Image 1 (cartoon, rainbow, N blue to C red):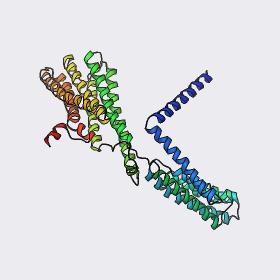
Image 2: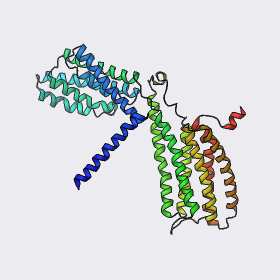
Image 3: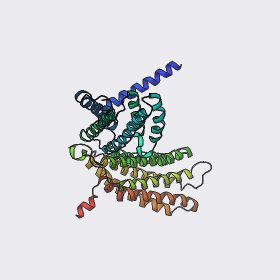
Image 4: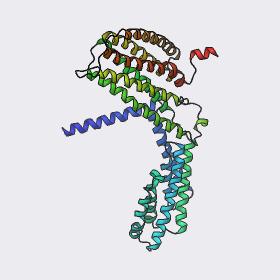
Length: 397
């Protein structure tokens, strides 16, 4: 049984790797970016070895490719920052190791006892980041190699500097990483997942077959939109960092367009809040221990129609962001905007006929939150997400 389970896990892993490879070959995306960065790191290490070990015939040429390999990072800015951090810890590790070897008269064990505790502790300093460990490993290289004169230590530092220059140069000049795609991906996820939630909610309300468990599931999905917003904020940070000291914006002729402005994020953050409020109210009207009184089947059926139109608005936004069938998406957007206003007016009329004050409380909250959701989708999201003016604004001049 264990052998069968292990085989299934191995097969699943192999299948996942195969899918990743096919995706990297067929489509641009994170998978292909990872392959490109890996090949760049390998190429930088090879160039550094060829320069120091083959051409300059350096005594410890390993330092150059080792440094170059580590400095092909996710962004050019990070490569530069890591290069400076690494140079600091390597210089410190080499000098301390040489001093310890001289003080112990060349004793490898004695030098390790003196240097490694200090360098390991120094490596935990937060200003050095992930590069702190290289101080201790450099000290190990110097101590175990047994070369600790000032001339030999100078060779180590020159080899390290050569590797750092090559690593940073390769990362900056050979397909420099520009993290734009992930912002677009996360922005498209928000309207798509919002539309899916609204469609599911509308189907349950219309069929009158929804339960407390369904409402709790809708609320959980609405709250999980916050995770997408967090991923979007992280993607924004990567985009900002990847643009610093990066010639990629000028060197590349093709690639994803710049992401929409950050005010689009605030639009969807507010939209997610309104969705969470709607699903929370529906959850409060369901089940045996309902805290609120349901506004009635007729009101909820009309509300389901309005939710469907809100879903259409979200789907049109997602297609516009993806630049997919743009003319058709814009037509769907305009039609859904008109229809949603009509449905809202009809629903507001029906709300006025609710006689039970407790039912009116729940219905009023649902109505207010949907009004605000539609306001975000129809007044801000379209122009903010695409970076283009509305149709009426274009006609006005």
